Image (cartoon, rainbow, N blue to C red; front, side, top):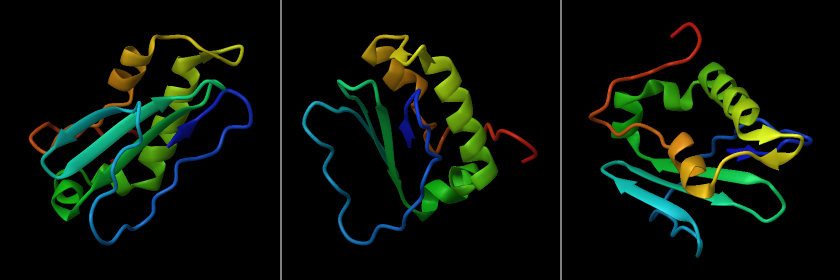
Length: 113
């Protein structure tokens, strides 16, 4: 998920095979069973949220691959994080805002689901 105030792009999902990638240096990382997530607040005001998960995660949180849910989440986060092109909150709070639930947490789908 790439969030930016100017020229927004929607979230993208891609299948990944093989070992899970290592987060880049400086990323705020959270590792949980079946989910690896990291957030980067770049110097140019772009916020990146990356989520790598397996089939057990999708079974617990089918909204994680639902296009409507992801689009609503992306729009909501973009609206809350930026003002006049600037990130409004400190990086640690950005990471908290972009945190996805673990497999033991209740589903919170946005939209109809």
